[in-house]
Image (tube, rainbow, N blue to C red; front, side, top):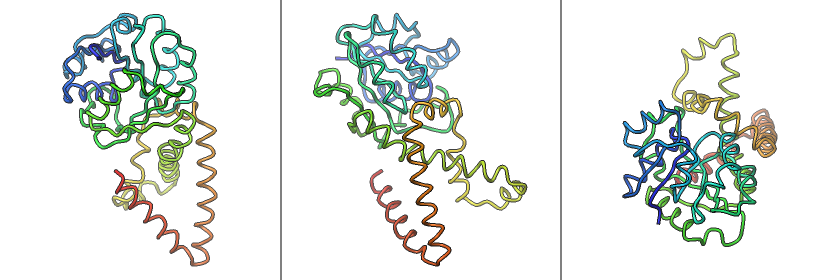
Length: 281
Protein backbone atom coordinates (compact mmCIF):
# COMPACT_ATOMS: atom_id res chain seq x y z
CA UNK A 1 0.00 0.00 0.00
CA UNK A 2 1.29 3.44 -0.89
CA UNK A 3 2.16 5.34 2.27
CA UNK A 4 4.45 7.96 0.75
CA UNK A 5 4.21 9.47 -2.72
CA UNK A 6 7.07 11.54 -4.15
CA UNK A 7 6.30 13.91 -7.01
CA UNK A 8 9.31 15.09 -9.00
CA UNK A 9 8.10 18.19 -10.79
CA UNK A 10 5.26 19.81 -8.86
CA UNK A 11 3.85 21.82 -11.74
CA UNK A 12 0.47 21.64 -13.43
CA UNK A 13 0.38 17.85 -13.83
CA UNK A 14 2.32 16.88 -10.73
CA UNK A 15 0.42 19.35 -8.56
CA UNK A 16 -2.92 18.27 -9.99
CA UNK A 17 -2.08 14.60 -9.37
CA UNK A 18 -1.27 15.40 -5.74
CA UNK A 19 -4.48 17.39 -5.25
CA UNK A 20 -6.49 14.67 -6.97
CA UNK A 21 -5.00 12.00 -4.69
CA UNK A 22 -5.95 14.04 -1.63
CA UNK A 23 -9.48 14.58 -2.85
CA UNK A 24 -9.78 10.86 -3.62
CA UNK A 25 -8.92 9.99 -0.04
CA UNK A 26 -5.16 9.38 0.00
CA UNK A 27 -4.09 9.58 3.65
CA UNK A 28 -0.35 9.15 3.26
CA UNK A 29 2.45 11.66 2.86
CA UNK A 30 3.13 13.53 -0.38
CA UNK A 31 6.66 14.86 -0.96
CA UNK A 32 7.51 17.38 -3.65
CA UNK A 33 10.77 17.70 -5.57
CA UNK A 34 11.00 21.06 -7.32
CA UNK A 35 12.60 24.48 -7.07
CA UNK A 36 12.29 26.26 -3.70
CA UNK A 37 9.82 28.74 -5.16
CA UNK A 38 7.60 25.99 -6.55
CA UNK A 39 7.78 24.01 -3.29
CA UNK A 40 6.65 27.11 -1.40
CA UNK A 41 3.64 27.52 -3.68
CA UNK A 42 2.83 23.80 -3.61
CA UNK A 43 2.85 23.84 0.18
CA UNK A 44 0.58 26.86 0.23
CA UNK A 45 -1.90 25.15 -2.11
CA UNK A 46 -1.95 21.98 -0.05
CA UNK A 47 -0.64 19.88 -2.92
CA UNK A 48 2.28 18.48 -0.89
CA UNK A 49 3.17 17.95 2.75
CA UNK A 50 6.87 18.75 2.43
CA UNK A 51 9.63 19.44 -0.01
CA UNK A 52 12.58 17.09 -0.35
CA UNK A 53 15.69 16.48 -2.40
CA UNK A 54 15.31 13.84 -5.11
CA UNK A 55 17.41 11.21 -3.33
CA UNK A 56 15.57 11.64 -0.03
CA UNK A 57 12.18 11.51 -1.72
CA UNK A 58 13.04 8.35 -3.68
CA UNK A 59 14.36 6.58 -0.58
CA UNK A 60 11.13 7.26 1.29
CA UNK A 61 8.52 6.83 -1.44
CA UNK A 62 6.40 3.83 -2.32
CA UNK A 63 5.29 5.63 -5.48
CA UNK A 64 7.55 8.04 -7.37
CA UNK A 65 5.72 10.21 -9.92
CA UNK A 66 7.98 11.88 -12.51
CA UNK A 67 6.08 14.89 -13.81
CA UNK A 68 8.76 17.11 -15.30
CA UNK A 69 9.55 17.70 -18.99
CA UNK A 70 10.48 14.62 -21.03
CA UNK A 71 14.21 15.37 -21.17
CA UNK A 72 14.22 15.92 -17.41
CA UNK A 73 12.57 12.53 -16.93
CA UNK A 74 15.16 10.93 -19.21
CA UNK A 75 17.95 12.47 -17.11
CA UNK A 76 16.43 11.32 -13.82
CA UNK A 77 15.66 7.69 -14.72
CA UNK A 78 19.28 6.41 -14.78
CA UNK A 79 19.97 8.10 -11.44
CA UNK A 80 17.13 7.09 -9.16
CA UNK A 81 17.14 3.28 -9.37
CA UNK A 82 19.86 3.06 -6.73
CA UNK A 83 17.74 5.01 -4.23
CA UNK A 84 14.48 3.12 -4.61
CA UNK A 85 12.87 0.75 -2.17
CA UNK A 86 12.94 -2.77 -3.66
CA UNK A 87 9.15 -2.81 -4.16
CA UNK A 88 8.71 0.87 -5.09
CA UNK A 89 6.81 1.80 -8.23
CA UNK A 90 7.99 4.64 -10.47
CA UNK A 91 5.69 6.13 -13.07
CA UNK A 92 5.81 9.26 -15.16
CA UNK A 93 3.54 11.69 -16.95
CA UNK A 94 5.60 12.24 -20.09
CA UNK A 95 3.80 12.78 -23.38
CA UNK A 96 5.97 10.26 -25.27
CA UNK A 97 6.87 6.83 -24.04
CA UNK A 98 9.31 4.99 -26.30
CA UNK A 99 12.57 6.53 -25.08
CA UNK A 100 11.37 6.90 -21.49
CA UNK A 101 10.38 3.25 -21.13
CA UNK A 102 13.57 2.11 -22.86
CA UNK A 103 15.64 4.13 -20.39
CA UNK A 104 14.20 2.12 -17.47
CA UNK A 105 14.06 -1.26 -19.21
CA UNK A 106 17.19 -2.58 -17.50
CA UNK A 107 16.21 -1.73 -13.93
CA UNK A 108 16.94 -4.42 -11.35
CA UNK A 109 15.44 -2.51 -8.44
CA UNK A 110 11.90 -1.18 -8.15
CA UNK A 111 9.43 -1.20 -11.02
CA UNK A 112 8.92 1.36 -13.76
CA UNK A 113 5.54 1.73 -15.45
CA UNK A 114 5.20 4.44 -18.06
CA UNK A 115 2.16 6.69 -17.84
CA UNK A 116 0.55 9.56 -19.71
CA UNK A 117 -2.55 11.38 -18.46
CA UNK A 118 -4.35 12.86 -21.45
CA UNK A 119 -5.11 16.06 -19.62
CA UNK A 120 -3.64 19.53 -19.39
CA UNK A 121 -4.02 23.24 -19.91
CA UNK A 122 -2.29 25.89 -21.97
CA UNK A 123 -0.91 27.40 -18.76
CA UNK A 124 1.84 25.91 -16.62
CA UNK A 125 2.82 25.85 -12.96
CA UNK A 126 1.44 24.59 -9.68
CA UNK A 127 -0.76 27.70 -9.45
CA UNK A 128 -2.87 26.18 -12.24
CA UNK A 129 -3.07 22.74 -10.59
CA UNK A 130 -6.59 21.37 -10.36
CA UNK A 131 -7.83 18.27 -8.52
CA UNK A 132 -10.42 17.68 -11.25
CA UNK A 133 -7.93 17.87 -14.14
CA UNK A 134 -8.01 14.12 -14.85
CA UNK A 135 -11.75 13.55 -14.52
CA UNK A 136 -13.18 11.75 -17.53
CA UNK A 137 -9.81 11.75 -19.27
CA UNK A 138 -7.91 8.74 -20.63
CA UNK A 139 -4.87 7.78 -18.58
CA UNK A 140 -2.50 5.75 -20.73
CA UNK A 141 -0.20 3.14 -19.16
CA UNK A 142 2.63 1.52 -21.11
CA UNK A 143 4.06 -1.72 -19.67
CA UNK A 144 7.05 -3.20 -21.47
CA UNK A 145 6.82 -6.79 -20.19
CA UNK A 146 3.99 -9.33 -19.94
CA UNK A 147 2.49 -9.44 -16.48
CA UNK A 148 3.82 -6.04 -15.47
CA UNK A 149 0.31 -4.76 -14.83
CA UNK A 150 -0.31 -7.62 -12.38
CA UNK A 151 2.11 -6.47 -9.66
CA UNK A 152 0.53 -5.22 -6.47
CA UNK A 153 1.96 -1.74 -6.95
CA UNK A 154 0.71 -1.50 -10.55
CA UNK A 155 -2.75 -2.61 -9.51
CA UNK A 156 -2.80 -0.01 -6.74
CA UNK A 157 -1.76 2.71 -9.18
CA UNK A 158 -4.63 1.73 -11.48
CA UNK A 159 -7.02 1.92 -8.52
CA UNK A 160 -5.88 5.45 -7.69
CA UNK A 161 -6.15 6.48 -11.34
CA UNK A 162 -9.75 5.31 -11.29
CA UNK A 163 -10.42 7.04 -7.97
CA UNK A 164 -9.26 10.40 -9.33
CA UNK A 165 -11.80 10.01 -12.13
CA UNK A 166 -9.51 9.05 -15.01
CA UNK A 167 -9.92 6.09 -17.36
CA UNK A 168 -6.92 3.71 -17.49
CA UNK A 169 -5.96 2.37 -20.91
CA UNK A 170 -3.02 0.02 -21.53
CA UNK A 171 -0.84 0.31 -24.65
CA UNK A 172 2.70 -0.67 -25.55
CA UNK A 173 5.13 2.27 -25.66
CA UNK A 174 5.27 1.99 -29.47
CA UNK A 175 1.48 1.90 -29.82
CA UNK A 176 1.24 4.86 -27.47
CA UNK A 177 3.60 7.04 -29.48
CA UNK A 178 1.91 6.26 -32.81
CA UNK A 179 -1.53 6.86 -31.32
CA UNK A 180 -0.83 10.16 -29.56
CA UNK A 181 0.97 11.43 -32.65
CA UNK A 182 -2.50 11.40 -34.23
CA UNK A 183 -4.69 12.22 -31.24
CA UNK A 184 -2.54 14.91 -29.59
CA UNK A 185 0.58 15.91 -31.48
CA UNK A 186 -1.04 16.37 -34.90
CA UNK A 187 -3.78 18.66 -33.48
CA UNK A 188 -1.06 20.74 -31.81
CA UNK A 189 0.88 21.10 -35.05
CA UNK A 190 -2.27 22.00 -37.00
CA UNK A 191 -3.25 24.67 -34.48
CA UNK A 192 0.29 26.06 -34.44
CA UNK A 193 0.48 26.07 -38.24
CA UNK A 194 -2.88 27.84 -38.56
CA UNK A 195 -1.97 30.52 -36.01
CA UNK A 196 1.50 30.99 -37.50
CA UNK A 197 0.07 31.31 -41.02
CA UNK A 198 -2.39 33.98 -39.96
CA UNK A 199 0.18 35.67 -37.74
CA UNK A 200 2.50 36.08 -40.72
CA UNK A 201 -0.25 37.50 -42.90
CA UNK A 202 0.07 41.23 -43.54
CA UNK A 203 -3.61 41.54 -42.62
CA UNK A 204 -3.23 39.79 -39.25
CA UNK A 205 -4.83 42.67 -37.34
CA UNK A 206 -7.86 42.70 -39.64
CA UNK A 207 -8.19 38.90 -39.39
CA UNK A 208 -8.13 39.05 -35.59
CA UNK A 209 -10.69 41.87 -35.54
CA UNK A 210 -13.07 39.82 -37.70
CA UNK A 211 -12.50 36.48 -35.91
CA UNK A 212 -15.31 34.54 -34.28
CA UNK A 213 -15.21 31.66 -31.79
CA UNK A 214 -14.26 29.18 -34.52
CA UNK A 215 -10.83 30.74 -35.01
CA UNK A 216 -10.37 31.19 -31.27
CA UNK A 217 -11.13 27.50 -30.69
CA UNK A 218 -8.96 26.38 -33.59
CA UNK A 219 -5.91 28.28 -32.31
CA UNK A 220 -6.28 27.40 -28.62
CA UNK A 221 -3.50 24.80 -28.74
CA UNK A 222 -1.15 27.31 -30.35
CA UNK A 223 -0.90 28.90 -26.89
CA UNK A 224 0.96 25.81 -25.63
CA UNK A 225 4.50 26.38 -24.36
CA UNK A 226 7.41 25.66 -26.71
CA UNK A 227 9.45 24.47 -23.72
CA UNK A 228 7.07 21.52 -23.35
CA UNK A 229 6.61 20.80 -27.04
CA UNK A 230 10.31 20.90 -27.84
CA UNK A 231 10.80 17.66 -25.89
CA UNK A 232 7.70 16.02 -27.37
CA UNK A 233 8.70 16.79 -30.95
CA UNK A 234 12.27 15.67 -30.31
CA UNK A 235 11.28 12.29 -28.85
CA UNK A 236 8.43 11.39 -31.20
CA UNK A 237 9.46 13.01 -34.47
CA UNK A 238 9.07 9.98 -36.81
CA UNK A 239 5.49 9.25 -35.68
CA UNK A 240 4.55 12.94 -35.82
CA UNK A 241 5.98 13.34 -39.33
CA UNK A 242 4.04 10.25 -40.41
CA UNK A 243 0.84 11.75 -38.97
CA UNK A 244 1.50 15.06 -40.70
CA UNK A 245 2.14 13.27 -44.01
CA UNK A 246 -1.19 11.49 -43.64
CA UNK A 247 -2.93 14.79 -43.00
CA UNK A 248 -1.20 16.42 -45.97
CA UNK A 249 -2.51 13.67 -48.27
CA UNK A 250 -6.01 13.99 -46.80
CA UNK A 251 -5.87 17.79 -47.12
CA UNK A 252 -5.04 17.47 -50.79
CA UNK A 253 -8.01 15.13 -51.22
CA UNK A 254 -10.33 17.59 -49.50
CA UNK A 255 -8.94 20.43 -51.60
CA UNK A 256 -9.57 18.42 -54.76
CA UNK A 257 -13.09 17.60 -53.62
CA UNK A 258 -13.75 21.28 -52.95
CA UNK A 259 -12.50 22.25 -56.41
CA UNK A 260 -14.75 19.64 -58.05
CA UNK A 261 -17.79 20.40 -55.90
CA UNK A 262 -17.70 17.07 -54.09
CA UNK A 263 -16.65 18.14 -50.60
CA UNK A 264 -19.97 17.26 -48.93
CA UNK A 265 -18.78 13.72 -48.20
CA UNK A 266 -15.79 15.09 -46.25
CA UNK A 267 -18.17 17.14 -44.13
CA UNK A 268 -20.27 14.05 -43.43
CA UNK A 269 -17.27 11.90 -42.47
CA UNK A 270 -15.77 14.70 -40.39
CA UNK A 271 -19.00 15.40 -38.54
CA UNK A 272 -19.48 11.69 -37.82
CA UNK A 273 -16.03 11.39 -36.23
CA UNK A 274 -16.46 14.65 -34.30
CA UNK A 275 -19.73 13.33 -32.88
CA UNK A 276 -18.16 9.98 -32.03
CA UNK A 277 -15.29 11.74 -30.30
CA UNK A 278 -17.66 13.75 -28.13
CA UNK A 279 -19.65 10.65 -27.21
CA UNK A 280 -16.44 8.95 -26.04
CA UNK A 281 -15.43 11.81 -23.73
